[in-house]
Image (tube, helix red, strand yellow):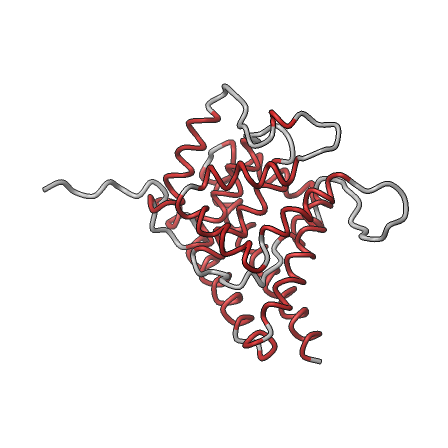
Length: 252
């Protein structure tokens, strides 16, 4: 009888502050799901969450976050909004089903949505770039998503976001794809089953801090990885507060 393979992410839960931060993020999201406005009206508040998240995610990349029709449409925002459609209603159910079974397929689909341009080359969409260990790291990430780890959901979500943000596997629209995957982890693990949180607001408020935290994570030191996970947990917690404001407005 062979013993089970060790969990590659298990050591992360022992890093200073990680376990407590993960619990706090989970509790904050669980609380907003119990908000009276979300007991039956969650499809409406979830749709608002996804829209706010899309605008904030585009803003991290320096794009306009305005939705009016003045001027030329911002291609980054347009891509983020197409991805938002993947995270709403029946499309979200399909996305989660694919994500939990074949995450690389879903990442390719998200990139197709995020990076499509009228003058772009469709042959590059959904295709990870070659070399630099990209394929190997993506395969490792897929293994984690499909059952290769038992760490708390906020920790897994942080690893997925850090890997995709730092690796930039497609070479375009990687941030939009990474932050959508962050949401898919939260939904698929039951951390945020109705997609109510808006963690992107933290990243949008200080994009430079976001990029610096990603760089620290990719450096691979214990301090950098721990700081990144704590940062992501704080973003989830702040996203729950944003979700509460959405629910309060919906119930007013």
